[in-house]
Amino acid sequence: MNNHIGLPLSLLELRHQPDIAVVELGMNHAGEISSLVSIARPEVRVWTNVGPAHLEFFDSVDAIADAKAEIMEGAGTDDLLVANADDERVMRHAGAFAGRVRTFAIDRPADVRALAVKDLGVDGTAAMIRTPAGDARFRHPSLGGRTSRTCSRLRRSRFASRCRCPMSSDARPFSSRRAAR
Image (cartoon, rainbow, N blue to C red; front, side, top):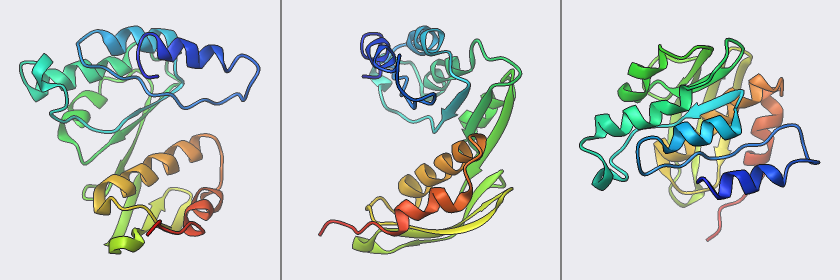
């Protein structure tokens, strides 16, 4: 549902639904995110990382970064880019964003940061999330370790603050879940 067919269908389903939608803009060729961002017209854009996925369609990982940078197109000054400060390729492009940029990270300075990240094995991951609005402890039952689940949590924290949700409301659902065994 993250392509030129699925995204419009997803958006059509939202005509009489909530004011906020989280959608993924997928790509495996240059130009695809550009088309999707013009359809979705997001006010908040999240750029998670740049990796070798779909490298068969690109000359290099840097070329993938250039294609993913299309997420910044058409942004206004009130729009927000939530960017992974731990990814150098993301940050090389983030400075060109027309709106505001907020960052999340584990290892580098950022607006939202995970501190004291602990891999709990089959019990998931725990960390302290530091944000401009305050700190919150979180524990996520899913496997994924230090980076995947923690970065997911950091992105949600940054998005939640944009929507004026308190940190406690974002942290509570994760601490009450249990990992499947």
